[in-house]
Structures are given as C-alpha cells and as structure tokens.
Length: 266
Picture 1 (spheres, rainbow, N blue to C red):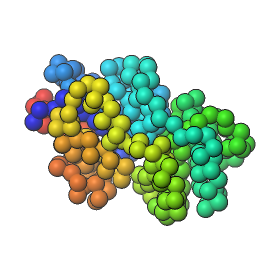
Picture 2 (picture 1 turned 180 degrees about the horizontal axis):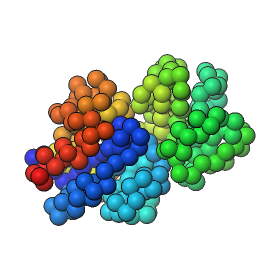
Picture 3 (picture 1 turned 30 degrees about the horizontal axis):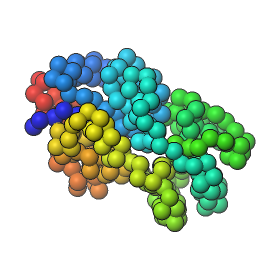
C-alpha cells in the first residue's frame, strides 16, 4: 500500500459524537506521516477557521478543505474558493423557505455564515459547532456577497425530501443531503471529490496513492478521489457498500487506529 495522501472527514469520522479527538494519538500519527512525506487533509462541511480552532497547532502543514469543499486553506492561506452567484443563491434560499420555513438556513460567504437572528438557542449551538464566524441578520436579502455554499439544518430530519424538491436547481448547483438533517449546496461541479482532485494535482499525487475516511452520504463523492476507501463502523450502509475497509467507530479513535495499522506505525 503506497499512501501519499490521507483525506479525513470530521463529524462522525475523525471527531467523536461530542466533537472531541485524541490529541496525543493524532499528534504522533502526524509526526509519523511527516517522516514518510505523507500529506494530511481534513475535508468537512465546517468552516476552515472552525477546524483550526478544534485541532489547534496540529492544523499546521495540514490542508483544510472546508465549507463543504468550497475552500482550501493551508497554513493560514486560502488557495481555492468556489462561489454561487448572489442572485442565484437568494433564489435557492427563497425556494427552501417556501418548502419549509422551520429549517435553519446558513448562507455561507468568505466572511462567515449568515443566519436569521430568530433561530432557537439549540439551533445556535448547532451553528456554532461548525462555524467560527457567524453573522445574525433579519433578512437574507440584505446579503451582498456571493456565497460559498448554502447549508440547511432540519431538526425534524426531512432533508432528503427537501433536497428532492430542489432538483430543478441541479443544472446550476451541486446539492447533497449528507444525512437526514443536513443539506449542502455548492457551485456546480464542486464536491469533496473534485476539490480533493485539486489538491492531488497540486501535490502531484494520484488517487491510487490516496486513502479517504468518511461516514456520510457526501463522502460517496470523496471516495471517488481515492483508491483506498474506508467507511467508519457508524457510517451509512450506502457508504459501507463502496468501501474497501470498515474502520472501528468514530468514538474509538477509528481513523488513527486504522492508519497506524495500515501504515505500520505500531
């Protein structure tokens, strides 16, 4: 197994259910990877800045593919951004609100995530779990920026149905329900797999030298960029069917333990 690039989803994969990780085991893994010139990527729906806050100094020399694969950040610098044009984004937001105005909609720009100021305290906790910079607004029409992505959180878990009712936008944007409670909408052709392809091209690393870890529906696209596909034990059955290997679950340090085994670190 000749691995040069490791790509890891965060929620439900690298992080435990309470958004923690084992600092010591990950630090040692990164040191061992660096000694063998193996590069590491986090690939997540979270803001890049939120990832930096979570992993702290271990973000150094780590590629962060954030905001649902619409941005790449490396050592403090953004090296890629993909946006949805402002008017198209507002048209999509209006449609989502017409379908169900109880869902939380995050309009994510380069300056942060915009969300209506009347959402519940529990929804605010969900938002701040993934977004470092949040702007509370009265009206989405006040947003002047183009958007990196639109994210929908539905506490009642009807996102699959909502995504189906947005299919007429698929000629303009990429839409994925990562699970029953979350939808991500990005520019056409932008997903975890295609953005990882950009990093592979930059580093001159091939999919056959790449291993990817995931748990959700949106990781199906990620798996297209890697020869070695690892689904967590807690992953959706559809993802497990595409995997070469099933890792122990996210609450048991499954990513690090699997990599140590596969790469012969212990």
